[in-house]
Amino acid sequence: MGATALPITGNAEPPAFRFIDLFAGIGGCRLAFEAAGGRCVFTSEWNKFAQLTYRTNFPDDEGSDHVFAGDITQVAVDEIPDHDVLVAGFPCQPFSIAGVSKKNALGRPHGFLDPTQGTLFFDVARIIEQKRPRAFMLENVRNLQSHDKGNTFRVIKERLESLDYEFHFRVLDASAVVPQGRRRIFMVGFDRGQYPNGSGFDFSALELPKLSPTMESVLHSEDGSEIPEPPYTDDFGIAAQRYTLTPKLWAYLQNYKIKHRTAGNGFGFGLVTRNDVARTLSARYYKDGSEILVDRGPDAIPRRLTPRECARLMGFPEAFEIPVSDTQAYKQFGNSVVVPVVTAVAQHMAPVIKTRSREIAVAG
Image (cartoon, rainbow, N blue to C red; front, side, top):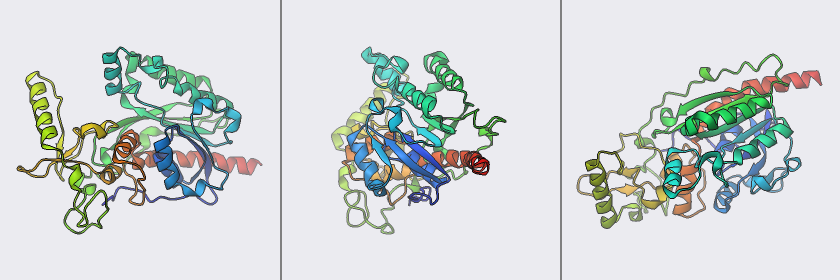
């Protein structure tokens, strides 16, 4: 199980570059950039439950020179250590298809008009402007590119280019490395002042490994071959009974699907077997698990994924600890990055970053 996951690497000695981890969530981007040879020197994450998961999995931060901050809007730039790479998966809800639909239904603003989340990109920009990192990597939902008829993406691109950074972007589908359809946009930039002849970075040359796994690679084996992991499994390694839907909820979801199919739209639950690829895992999974339900046979009620299966679906290592409730775990993994995808991006950036490091060392 978890064949697509990375080991938790710890800090490289000596590090090839220093990076900061903004809107860090539970540390998916950090795992990726550490695997590419970097050392994290600063983390910002405001959610107390995500902080708990992050700190639990990076215990070596205690007593080191690593700085952990909460709300990035309250952090003065001079409190942020110097760094080579800025990494940020800034909140996607203001730009996601589901987020925009929900806000429209509630009559609330979205995108850059969202007063709490939409403007957080500009905090990223102010840090880039004042700290002048060698490079940045930003991640968001694919819909960012088309949000507000393309104006949102245009503002982001123009703002970063106005800071004299190259701007490269690409949409990557995680289904190459994990069994879920999950497309995200990655934006990468390099400081033109530090790469006067151009970085030479070519995003189109990045190729994700063609693993094309199925749900077999993430589901509990339930055949006695997997070490039991209570509370997610029973003592025999079978998914705990509490993850099976109640008869009432299962009946509701079936009726809901029939209702919307009759109306001519595709709303409804998603049922998967071990041979399938799942829909996108979302932060709302804790509500009813409807987007990814595990088929338990024709006469059995399906079940939700366990949090450990969600961790695997996002490419986290088996050693990754989950110290929070199921509800919080579902939110955290649904909001996370797919670690192997970000790792591929980080490793694609690393030779350019390291080349500049060598140039600086020689010049010095």
